[in-house]
Image (cartoon, rainbow, N blue to C red; front, side, top):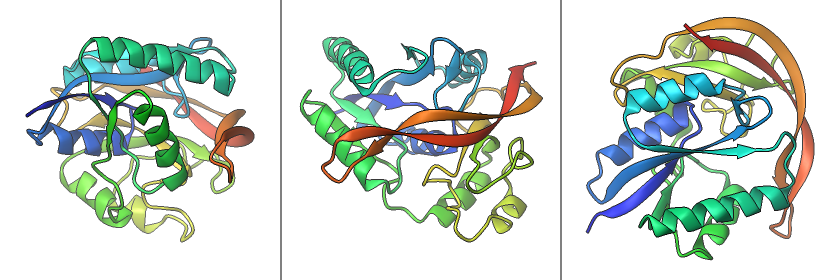
Length: 238
């Protein structure tokens, strides 16, 4: 039996590798890419990627998509309401499974599993608990190409964003930074690789610093908010 599945597409490298795995697994039929963007800025949440480049990615992958447009500073209540409405629509379309590119964030997985289980949606994590050093090297060896679009100011300055990830990049990462940025140290835009019909062309603009409210899971498994500072590089379609 093949399970009709939607994939939570972030536009970055972990999403790209997880989708690559799933497209080769005959148990799942990936029929929709789901992404959240900020309605005010028209950019992918967390990554800061322009929506026009996200659309180019999706067109190159050739899978149907759905973009959830969040208000400028959505509360968790608004976020949950929008996700519930989206899930109800997906269920009506016959979707039974949801896939994610997460690797080892236990609290985030617990939250997602709890929310989706309540909607009778099963979750899939193709990269779960895999060694992140091995994953990033496999990513490069498969021919994927990706650029750092945002990075935590806790670990990096503005020189880090706009860097193409290669083996030299991996070797130079600080020891306390995960090779895949799985703890939120950095985010990427994947612009070429085996899941794309053609590479996505882009130009590199200015670098800026921003603070934003981000969800944080508390000890009682409820989501709260905290402020985080990030450096961003503005990529534009070319």
